[in-house]
Length: 325
Ligand SMILES: NC(=O)C1=CN([C@@H]2O[C@H](COP(=O)(O)OP(=O)(O)OC[C@H]3O[C@@H](n4cnc5c(N)ncnc54)[C@H](OP(=O)(O)O)[C@@H]3O)[C@@H](O)[C@H]2O)C=CC1
Ligand SMILES: CCCCCCCCCCCCCCCC(=O)OCC(=O)COP(=O)(O)O
Image (tube, rainbow, N blue to C red; front, top):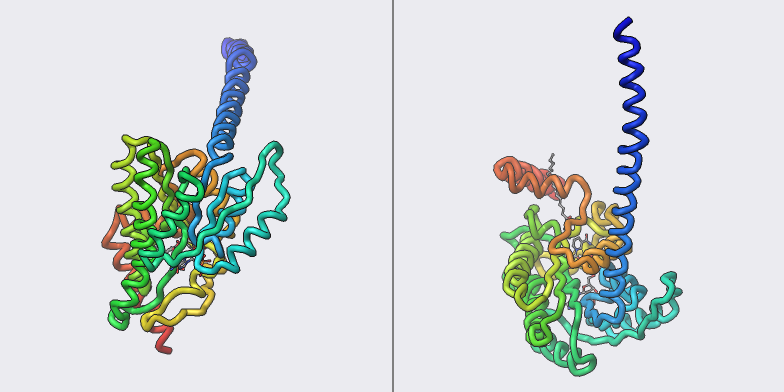
């Protein structure tokens, strides 16, 4: 008898609390969140619009999709690649693209042809870019090549080739553009690394080494250039559906020429390009763009290295057996 009215009173109080506190609080928080996202989006739009953005490896895969995304955002692009015809085709493709973003004016990109594994051409390219456009706001070091092979069979020239393309080329370009960024007290350098910049999986030695070096270099750079107001973003994707495995170099320097199942089932390059656009727009320091297994593998490598090494040794044994049979 005493309990029943007490329950009714409590229910009434709860109703009062819901209508006077919980619901306004919920809607208030949602409103603040929406406002925050809107401001973030507006800031990002202003940052990317009219920005001079250099993209390496723009002729294919992720680089090409980044070109489309930054072009649509109103950036002034400098598209870099080894093949001038492919670059011309891309410029043509961009010019016919319909922009769904209202009030954003797009710009005809410039193209610069050079090979990242040839330092001299990289330095000339940097000079050409600065001569043309006066400055660079955002440099996206995207170009890269993968590798497949056993360490014991791989010639040092192949290791060097992968390092030249994935590490020395991008750092040469970065160093060549850095002084002008420091002078302006403004700039943003982006490195497209890989999950393999954080973990090493068997038969990818040169590639994993080049991406670990990339991660280390750009982490150092971030700390060193903060005082000049320069941002550094390292992006570590998992598998993306591109030609990366097809174009991978093998132990004897020849082309691998196989589309790996994991690559074929990866995220689309357009999806990853949107993540790159948003990470750059928000000046994020580091972003992992990967599914559950690669992300767990990174955690495992850091928290339980012995278990990770055992798994990798088992993987190597299995892959070798499959190849032999
Ligand atoms: N695909 C994936 O699963 C993943 C990719 N990544 C990284 O993403 C980046 C882009 O690769 P992705 O789009 O996948 O692969 P693609 O093979 O499709 O594109 C690679 C690009 O790099 C260019 N390139 C290669 N070697 C050189 C060189 N010596 N000088 C100049 N440019 C060169 C290629 O030019 P060309 O057309 O002339 O060959 C091409 O434009 C790479 O850094 C890669 O390591 C990271 C994680 C996963
Ligand atoms: C419960 C814990 C599970 C942990 C599983 C550990 C074993 C799984 C190994 C997973 C390896 C993921 C590798 C991801 C590699 C990757 O995303 O690389 C991206 C690339 O750069 C692709 O280049 P590639 O030429 O190698 O195709």
